[in-house]
Length: 116
Length: 111
Image (tube, rainbow over all chains, first blue to last red; front, side, top):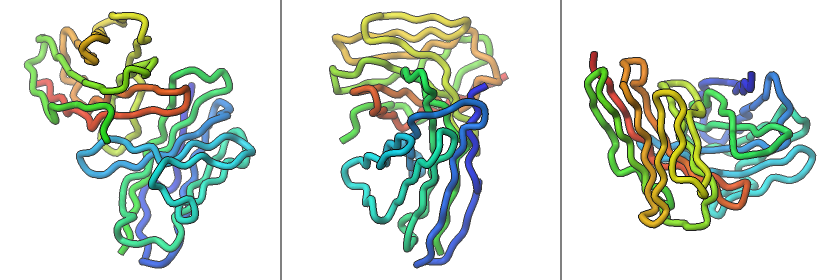
């Protein structure tokens, strides 16, 4: 149980275009989803926290107009990287927490974004 | 401002021996600490956790120790197995929704 999927697993896009990444909780309902970014050999950096049906809470330094997050249902959250630039190239990972809350998060497999 | 640090990027251990992975933190308000295991091209998977009110939690071959005065936690794996080879992240929770991760330690268990 507690499976989280991400799609796509890899995406290459041209500079200036937008890319959407989907995060789905497959066998549980997630009231809260988290979006992380990981640079090579660095820790997971929390970008934003989203709760179903409400606006995401962004961490300091994360541009909310550039990284659009939508959590429209209890099983789906999307991250859209708008007007992507090469410096946005990174590994993006989502995680979800179930209705019971608590400290456990279940992570998706991640999405490798490369902006050329 | 890295609030959770894993100072050893890698660790190599012989099969059957003990693996000790270390993690330091700076924020005394963290209330939960977690260890995740990550294989290449996969998301982290939860391994074991410990509440800030405890100093030890054990689950099979895995034991996490917490030293609050030193703001230090460690994960012990004994005996280590080749399948344990992965990147291990420690994480700390603050204010229910904020999780801070270390940079990971790559464990290699040699057969």
